[in-house]
Picture 1: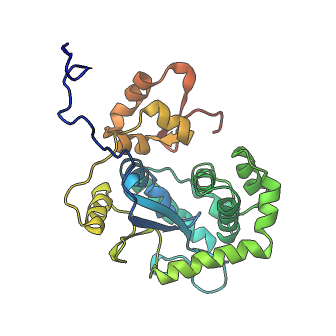
Picture 2: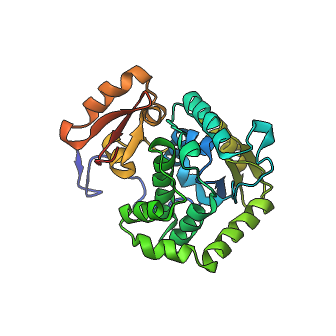
Picture 3: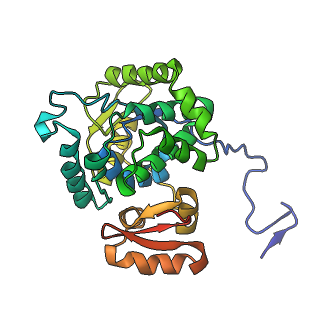
Length: 305
């Protein structure tokens, strides 16, 4: 340790006596639009990849969630003939296939026993939370709704279920759901539908990144992590990006409340067989519960499930 009498500094002194510095974060110049729907199974499947992408590269873009309107209502004609979807029961097998392929658990039997008749009610609730509270709180609602639907087999278009989910966020569930049922709820949703059309979105999930020159990339469907990173590089016209360090697992679980094995694997570059020991190493036994659903491990801080 060297203290210099001339510069009045201990350690290495800067050559300049007065240096102007700027600690402001670089301004986010990219807008990312995530066009989705509460009952989109492939949107549930990309949660692990999307979470890591936002965690590590979210400082480069402004994130916008856009409701796309997957199902207004069931009717006598085909809903999605290309995938063999003509009635609610047809969805069950498709969902289970997506769940098995992605390892984000989907039960699917709800669509036989108590099918969701429309994705518009939970979408309207999302929009009201977004308007009255914040985009972050609305996104949390979307996650809780998907957990309820896909993993825990609850009808998220049912009023009582929507109220319960919103209540669990610490908000006034009945008031918010009632507001969503008013004309304002559909007006907000129609604005998202118009934006999705303007962006040229035809299916979900679709992620669109647009830079200041109104140029960018559109990525349709669920893709590997590298697709989104490369798309952001193209949008920014940069060869290299600086990812943020990964959050600790304790902080991640505290924020997310519930994480499935696949989500932990993708976030921390783990093999499936490594997850249990990783969780035990990162958390004390009284801070979590490890459970299993449809053959997949999940970890939660709550009593749910």
